[in-house]
Amino acid sequence: METSNSHNQGTGNLSIDNEDVLLPESDCTTGGARASIYRLYETKIAALTRKNRVLEGQLAAAFIGREAAEKNVSSALKSRQEMEKKLVDTVREMELLKEKLACVELAQEEANSLSNIVHSDNLRLEHDVAFLKAVLDDTQKVLVIILSEAMS
Image (cartoon, rainbow, N blue to C red; front, top):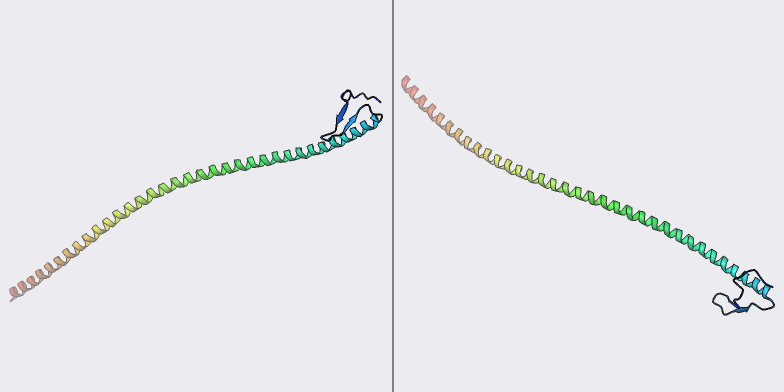
């Protein structure tokens, strides 16, 4: 029985996978052997096709996972950039607050200095008032004495 499959002609022996089974083509049961070989190859091709589909599914899942990971990395980088910007803004705000604090401290020192000057002036004025009261009292006593002598 001869087939029109030209790639099987002239091979002499066919090797099945890695097994050491050799089938001669000129055997009297060539038709049965070929049918058996075709079934074996169809079975192997079907298994390989299923395995290929599984691998394609795994590859598709890996691509989806990779895309998700890339999105996560992109999101993380964006969040990092936003946090770095917020950090820079916060550092600037802290510097401004430090400057304001230095100005407030300087104003507090000036206020304390002015308060000390006012207190010192108040003490001097109190002494001056006390001295003037004493002078007035002495002057009134002298006037009373002068008036009482003049009237007598």
